[in-house]
Length: 163
Image 1 (cartoon, rainbow, N blue to C red):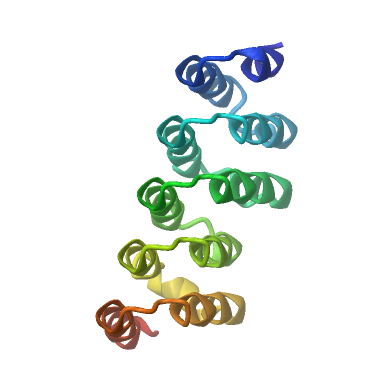
Image 2 (cartoon, rainbow, N blue to C red):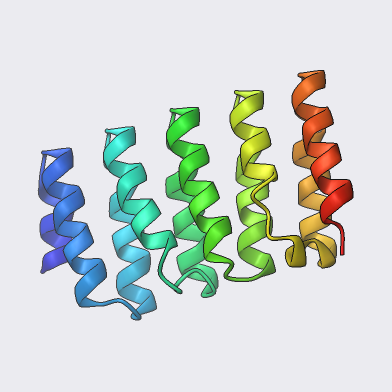
């Protein structure tokens, strides 16, 4: 009922508030979380969508593959590089495992701003770099940075952070 209401509400702010209530009410139900994140993808406001997704990222819920896929699908639909990078950095800070870090790095490739992309890359938990999938996603995202300064900053960070 709560998720159905979240899908039908026209106001982005009200939709975010309703879906956040669903997150609080059903914090560990993968089916509800997946549906909530799918509904979050219908929020037109990048700021409201990012706010809900940052709140979701701080929960230990992204280890579930379906929830993680719905989360990153909703993140990919954020047009604002600043909002998108803030959500991806929140997911990195939550440190929910290599699959989440790899997903954040894959999604970072869709960020046009080299500075925002570099901030996401340098928020990768250093321990996650032990994972081959994370290293591959990191390298692929780093190759999309056109700015020499930002690429150099990321490469320097990487050299200092490798386990």
